[in-house]
Image (cartoon, rainbow, N blue to C red):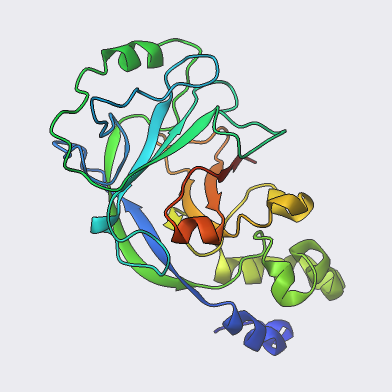
Length: 266
C-alpha cells in the first residue's frame, strides 16, 4: 500500500478490512442480449404467471438491472445460480421512501432461482408507452450487458463499517490531521474508493451512509448490488449512486424480501 506517512501506522487496520467483491463492468454492446443475461435496462425475464411489478401508485416500475449468478464469479453467501432483478419506480424520487427505506412499494427485488419457465411475458409495450412520458427520467437509457470479475477492496471512508475498524466515522477520524485533514481524506479515498458498480464489498455514497445515523439499519450489513452513474446513458439525478443492502442471514437463505434501498447524489 502506497500510504502517506501519516497513515502508515493504520496499515494493519486497513489490511484487516480486506474483502472480496465483484467488480461489475458495463458493455457498450447492446444488441441481441438474451433475456436471461445479466444486464441493466431493457425488458425483464418474467414468467407469464407473474404480474409485472408496479409501484404503490399502480404505475409500472422500470427494470434497473438483472444479475444472472451463473455468469458471476462466486462469493461466499451470495447465490451461485438464479436471476436477481432490481426494479424501481420512475417517480421523482426513483421509489425511495425516506421514512422507510425497506418497504418494497417504490422498488422491488425479485429472485428467480430457476430459469426454465417455458412461457414468458413478451409484450412490454405498456412499459414503453409509460417511459415516454415527459415527466419520466429513466436512470438507464437503453439496454446493456454486464460483465464481472472478482477483486479485493478495503473499507471506504463513506461506508458505516469505517467506524468499526477505526473507532470513529470518516469525518471524525480525519479531524486529527488538522491542517492536512482534507489531504489525508483525499489520499485515503483515492486509494480505497468504493465507487463504481459492484456486488459485495463496501458501499459508496455521495452524501452519507444512512446506516451511520439510523442504527436500526445496521443489520443490513451486506452490499447486494451497487449501481453508480456512468455517462449520459446511466445517471442517478445529479451524478449519484444507488445501493441495495441485505441482512447476512437473509442472503444465506436467498431471502430477498427484506432489502434496504438507498440512492443519493451530489
